[in-house]
Every structure is written in structure tokens, then in C-alpha cells.
Length: 448
Image 1: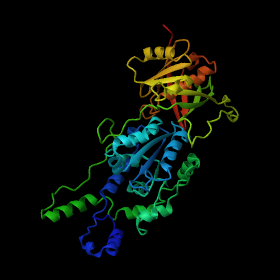
Image 2: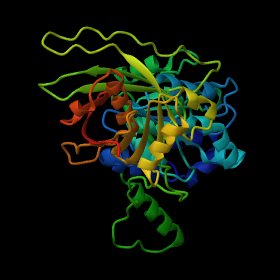
Image 3: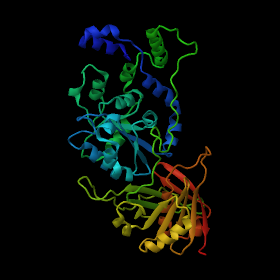
Image 4: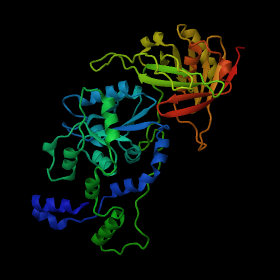
């Protein structure tokens, strides 16, 4: 079964006796991807990609010269840089690995290798998981010479090649052409500027030639395959049209075909904030930028600096100096970091108010304790014992905010740290992460 006549040409050249057995039948996987593209926003919502976020997918095929098997240790540097350099609320990260990696090393070993990256926000798609939906939802793919990276380019997604062993490929193949045309990752140089350039310079038709070579019968593979199979067994085809099952939004859970839900960040977070006090014309606005603090290591850059914000345009409130604090989940694997926390976090506690009180007692060095109680709500205990509930107002499309509610607590910390009154937030608060603004409703429960 071949998807394009160019493959038949190469087959005739490589193995003439086999050519008469070839059937041109399109590509069912590519057809399902094409059919899924109009549902991209549904996939992004199911994967927890918030408004203004970019989804970066790391993909590796199997073999010693793949991105996962590269002997120059590009992948450890890449995972480390994804965590360090990309603000956690501006980017979502997923990894799609070839099933042979999982079967060759074993799921336990693969999970062990990726565990620290998962603590810093990486979602690892299981080998039978919805990788096609993840690919359709991606803003960029960092990959190698595997078919998934090729599919990404063929559907118009920006591609950055982290490994590409040209010697392993037929130079006349479309995949080899991808290696000659796609930009290359520059290991050990800052990653974020490379991603920004990739996204800025990309044009959806950049790989139009590769799209044309992916299938000579786009959308028609189901009919071609069924006709072939029924012909081989000597039966008439059924009368209803042949079709391929539609790709549904990714489900969450423990099933082998599900994608893990976005888990709370278990690595310490360095948080930069600045406040625009826009009263009385508008509610206060607080910008929050969080970075995963993955500790010391060979790729560790200097910590984000705290600098003064640029002057505001005439007629607008002047933003205050950028400040920083440390937020740490109480279940962070490295408990020695907890004494550094200004803000202690948790999620889904059965009695969140009680937990915040206990957390403030256990961690006397911290200023606040916050528990995420719903996908759009965070409960925060402040130093005087008051409880502040921060809830996202529904968006214009009536959908719930998909921002991590722990961000709300960091905004409240920035406001409180500057000596501002909590009562000034009762008319609302706007939290900005990346390019997205999140409107919050604030309620205060005095200490009882």
C-alpha cells in the first residue's frame, strides 16, 4: 500500500519484482488529520491550552539517531530549556514518543527519564494516546525524521528539527526533503528566541510541496482501501460509503488511549509581577509571569531579573516596579525547597479552608497559602487569617477560564505585598498572563 506515485517510482528502482504488488491507496492517517483540523480549537480546549497559550510538541521517532536516542544529549537540554525559558502560563508542552521507545525501554524507564520534565509541566502522551489530536492542536513541533514530524509539516505546522540523520533516509524521499528545508534546532543556545523566530517566520504554505507528496488521494483513502480489500477476498463492497472514524477531542483518565490531564506544577516557580492600579476608571490589572525553577544544572541560566517597567503611555496609570516571589506546591518532590516559598500551593483538598490554615502553621515563613478548588477558582488565606476566593468570570463565549488558578493567588500576593487593601479588589481584578487577560471576581471572608 503506497500513498503517492513517487513511492512507486522509488519502489520500482529499489526492488523491481515487488512493483506489481503495489497499490496506490492514499494515507488514512493523513486523511484523519485533515478531517480533524476544523476541530482544532476543541482539541486545544480538551488539552487544557488556555487563551493566549502556545502548544509546543516534542516528537521523537525511535532509533539511536532519533531525537530521543541522540548521543549528544540534545533531548535533556531541550526539556530543561523548555522548562526554564518558556513562561509556564504562556506555553503548554507535550511529548509524543514513538511506541517502539516505550516498548524498547519499558514504560517505567521512560516515565523515570521524563519525570522531572512532567513536574515542570510537560504532558507525556501515552503510546496509544491521541497523538493525532495533539498534532492538530500544536502551534509548533520540535522533532526529527519520524513520520509525526513530517505530518506536522504537511498540515502547515511550524517544524524545528532537533535531530535529522540524513544518512538514514532515501535522498529522494519527501522526508529527506523536509530535512533540507526545515530549520534546525541550535542546541545549547537560548531556546525561546529560536521558537519565536520559528513562529514569526513561518508561512502555512511553506511545506506545500510536502503536503502534495503526503497523499495522491487526500480524503479518499477509506474508499480505496476498502475497494482493495474486498477485491482481494472476492466480495462485493457494501453499499454505504467507506469512511474513517473521526478523531474526537482527547479524553482524560487512566485509559491507555487517554491523555493525562494537566497536572499541578510540582517544581518551584519563580514569579514576576507588576501592578497597574487603574482605579477608579477600571479594576486593577496585575501581570503575572511564572517560570519553572528546575534547580542548578549544566544548562541553568541566571535567574530572571527584577527590573523597572518601561514608562506608561500618557494618560495611563504608571506600572509599579516588577517584583518577584517564589510559589511552591506543598507536594513538590524536593521538600527542602519549601522553606523558600512565599506562597504555598495545593489543589483539590477535600477541606481547602482547613488546609490553608494548617499550611500557614506548618510553613511559618510563607506569607500566603492557596488551594485550587475548581478549574477556575482559587482559595487563598492571607496573613491576617482572612480567606479570599478568586473566581474567573466567564469569557465572552461563556466558557470557563482555562488558566491555572494558582496564577490568581500570585496576583493577590503581588497586590497584598505592596500594602494594598483587599477591599479595593471587591469590584474585580484583571490578571494578565502572556497575551491573555483573565477577569476575576473577588470575595473576602474575614477571620472567624
